[in-house]
Amino acid sequence: MFDTSVIEKPQEVVIENAENQFDKTDLVVLKGGFSTSDHSYRFEIKSDGAGEIFYSDFAGDSEEFAHEVKVEKLAAEIEETIREQIVLQSEENALESGEIETIREEISAEMLEEVFWEEINQTLEDPFFRSVYDDGEWGEEFQTERGTVNEFVEFLRLCVLTEREIIAGNEDYLVVEAETECEEAGVSECSYYTNRLGELVEIACEFYKPSGFRYDYNDGCYDRNSGYSMSSESVSVSLPEAARAPVREKMLANVRLREKLVQMEVGEEKIKRLTAF
Image 1 (cartoon, rainbow, N blue to C red):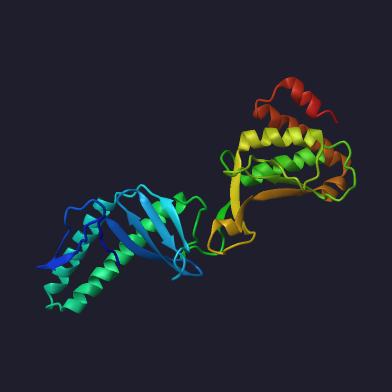
Image 2 (cartoon, helix red, strand yellow):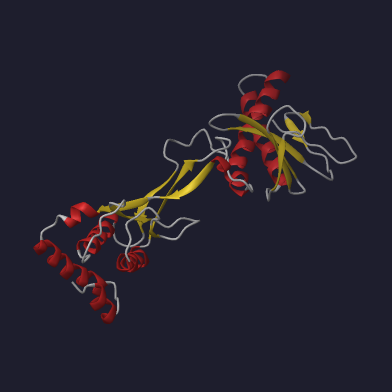
């Protein structure tokens, strides 16, 4: 449901002949609500670009935000939609005042919630509320802008197979993370690492341009991003498996790695250094 109000001058929305008339005012305020996976909230947006989300019935438990919604235009669109629906339903049966008010409440609530999710939610300083329509996975799968994920993983496997020596330690995998809005693609902090592998992974990421992310729960409110952290999706290659590979397979991998690096237009001197077996 939405209301209109003014500064220093009260305003009413009057229904006349199935039409809602907006008076010319200094400030228009639209009041609506939205539901997340856990809670329901009220919010309001004003024509001066200010807005507020109310978390409970206690005064002061709210969040102010700025927005770029054209409130006057939205109010007119809501009124027009309400008018059209009233006219449409009136053609079948005469509507009582209670039925007209129900139409008004349902349409305004639906349109304002749609505006919140499409235009407001993603602009909040502490983004964002999670819609009830979001399903299980929250993010994007690991993907590559060039080539395929399988080709990317196969290149990483060639890199591991051609390592001169794999030193036993706590890290049993080469783990490569995709690019996100927060992090560049590259070797994970929990990955096995050598300078050579780091250089090869950098070449691979520049060529294939992997991306993908998920949101992992951290702490705080389940509805908000403050309770989640963006994490890169990743792929991995087993080091013990590569270490057990026969010498012939490793030598063949070195030939294939050289061919791949040539295709990626890596300099000859760098190729010689990275494929010295």
